[in-house]
Length: 566
Image (cartoon, rainbow, N blue to C red):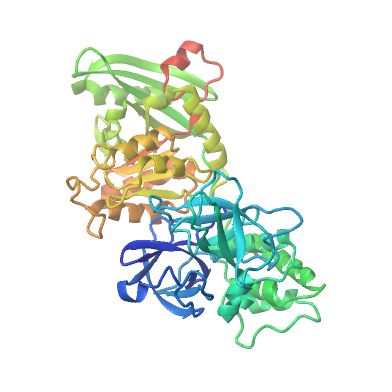
């Protein structure tokens, strides 16, 4: 379930009606009772695990003939989206995948009241016995867990260990305190929509092989690998396997589903293994190698603090980090009128301590109420007004994140992010910012990396969300100092919102950039913006905080206490 972007939220007339799941690039399955008002009020489908993808219009193209009552059969509907989406469809499990000699934990992702972004519930199958040849009974995995409720109807029921779909939630028990429900298994849904039959694999394919093939196809799609799926299948097929369809395969997914769903018998597993091995070999030759290794940053740290001696004075400390050591360069309390010159001279002096040729990084550690300062626009030299952020990779960080516990959590997060091919953006738009508590939960997920804000930190409507991102702690936060400035309640995050436009550009720009490369990538954006009037990234602010860059194992305890990022 780590990459289950195929979960869908169904809305009728702008109101959440239930859930669904993507089974082809343009088809979504849900319950008929979820979309009963869709023809009148209009249907939209939102993939909440793909931030930035707008809601898509949809229409009902098939149904199971549901009669309208809770006990009526055929409560299934097929929605066709206005266009195909670049999301891997849900993988369906064999018909007997939901039960075994021991209970298997099942997970449901629904949208009950108060959880527009979705929430999880854990269940199991009571018994393999079908009720009215239509449903399997679900019972809560834990009696104090999330109950099924309106908003879960149409949700995929998935195996927790593989993420494969074994059925669809159709009803809750209805009685208060009873945490049971019903699901329609995949083989019953296929009875009402025959096109689903070819998507349900037979049970003799090993789970690990199916999961490996699915992961490889996803990698190939993301990498844009161009190959002929018919030739790939033909090379892998055994002597008794069927020929590919006369019309061929329109994608790698089609070829993979053909092998998983159409092949049967003892040779099917061997064909699956050969296809998987050939696809893996193809990826090794076609996937582009990384352009350059991740930089090993040699940072120059500029700490600015409230002096305590008046608003016009600032406490400044400049340090350089080289070969695992922190080298103090200069410190003083200076009036704001001399601040830029003092910092500029301190940075110049700090370069003497860096290893020649190392990847320099300018990091400003600021009090929270100064994080929006345009330090990247300060002049780089007395005789050169080129902005500092257009000469060197430049980031800001927050003094308040200096605590050892916060540094520990951030270090663990960055250790995970090292393996990420790109920075996944979590958007905080103007129109509907989620509750700060829910934002915290999202930012603490293993794949969380970058929180992007449509408004600057001082905006009242998103300030609590910005503070939450700092304390979560999000490893990376990005915003525009000239982001949406509409008054409270005046902006709904529509197409005219400058903050939305900024996040749209940012999402497209950083999705393939490894998190460790972001400072260098933002440097390039700032250079572009400085040369082009009206560029979207002119006022971009990058809060980038990797504690491993600022380690100093040989420094004294006093030096660590003084440094907010050591």
